[in-house]
Image 1: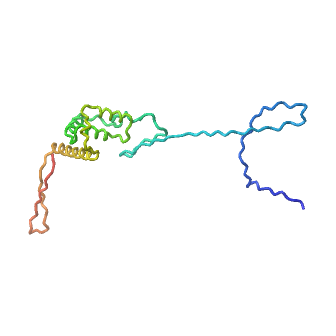
Image 2 (image 1 turned 45 degrees about the horizontal axis):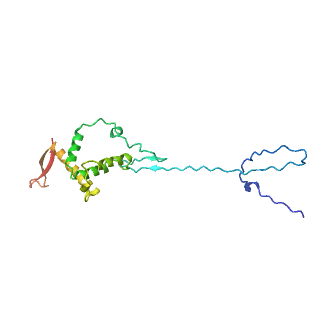
Image 3 (image 1 turned 135 degrees about the vertical axis):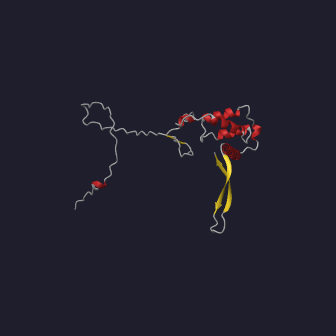
Length: 206
């Protein structure tokens, strides 16, 4: 009985991909040769290109905004942005500058601690090269003394500044208003019992 050759169905055949054949310069056939030389196939060299990307993402600020770069930038593009470039509001009066100078003079911290804490709270969460240059300028100021940092705590310093700002804002608001007390009569619920009067202090008015 003849033996049958079993072949795999076409849908189950897995043909491996193959590169194109290389071009080989073969000499012209000679009349003395009865059969041509076999074709020589050179292996195909596969080239792999690796692209390394160092993505950079900044911290999220209080407005839930951040910056993300596909590559590490050579400089901080927002390091030199002024507050005027971020707001379309008209320029404020110089009263704020006067109030800031007054608040600095009334700071509960010494000058050295005030300078260092002010650099910490300048609004930039990620310190750039410009911020480090600013810190170097602060350290070289004549009114900066290392001895005044004895026992310095950033948390305690910020708490003192916050309380001082709240007191200053309250006093500024209080100076522009008049304070008085008002009397409120609360009914007793019985027509035979007169209402009771309560005095409410701290009413501010203009």
